[in-house]
Length: 154
Image 1 (cartoon, rainbow, N blue to C red):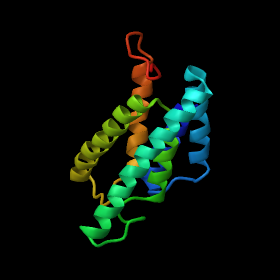
Image 2: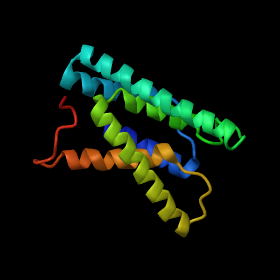
Image 3: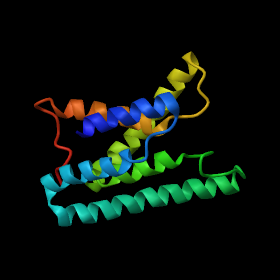
């Protein structure tokens, strides 16, 4: 189910630069359910709170940088609302160490993919949620292989 939701996010964000808002709560519920089935709800609650704290700290740093250094608008100029919702949905889905590694990996993947696509196609903004969803699709596919590490090990 998460695979299909990631596909919808990637498709909508890359094509239209917007994602239907009902997708993000659905993704949160599906990822939380998967996480709970591996770890239990108490563990998931603590990991989710810590992950959301990390996301909020990153967004605060981005906000301060945007306002002070670039003297620009934050929302829908530096980052889209859909990207923020995607980060929050993503935060409830994994233990903190796994989340941190996947989050940084997805951001780097998005950067490299944007730079590659930008040289071929005229693209002014990064469909960040869509590119991160593509990264997570790849992660889910790699997790199917027998020797792949378990993303939910503590």
